[in-house]
Amino acid sequence: MKNILSIQSHVVYGYAGNKSATFPMQLLGVDVWALNTVQFSNHTQYGKWKGLIMPKEQIGEIVQGIDEIGELAKCDAVLSGYIGSAEQVTEIVNAFHTVKSRNPNAIYLCDPVMGHPDKGCIVADGVKEGLIKQAMAHADIITPNLVELRELTGLTVENFEQAIEAVKAILTKGPKKVLVKHLSKVGKQADKFEMLFASSEGMWHISRPLYPFAKEPVGVGDLTAGLFLANLLNGKSDIEAFEHTANAVNDVMEVTANSGVYELQIIAARELILTPRSQYKAVKIT
Image (tube, rainbow, N blue to C red; front, side, top):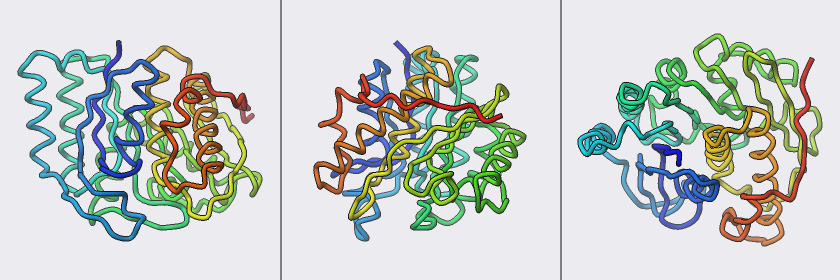
């Protein structure tokens, strides 16, 4: 069994951060060591919430605690998502290097959560800068959305061709693999949900339906990053992991859209996460 140290937010009600990613990764047979950067009553897009940002020291202390019982060498990957404070960025990078010192084969997937294409940045001061200046250089895999793609590269990304160039730019900054979770307005078709994956082997594009929502669900990116990492750890090829992730997320979105409920319907779609009904294929960009 593979093990992921997942360092991101937790919400008591609803689905975002670890709440969105943990169960789907477990469904794929991966054990998840959830370490929360914040604990909120609900996600922030409700406009109001209660809860606390965890002290930055907690990250290092918990990793040390796992190490002291001799289990850290079993950690196969670190996943970071929503970060509650700028100081936590350094702690997460340090945590990965501690894991790496115990298991040289461990990898780091950074989901550089900065915001939503239609909502702008929703993170604490300094987090964006920390992700750009620290986390990106240490990540093996990075999973930006459109806003994050622009911020990570400093490039103008207003069309599909510019998105491709931005992805190529990220591959020169440390990450070996880039998964663009959502191309949003710069995709090929306005009525589709489109994603990109790139590595040294090339670049692939996948397109699936775009479902209408009165309010866009939160936690989709967290679900995407988690599934992609779990698939890779399970031995799938990059493209197999990309396709399974896109199809599983599509099925979750369809179930959610049909439910009329704001929150992601991850429990209701659990069987589809494991065995997606959708069969959309990635197309290599030449």
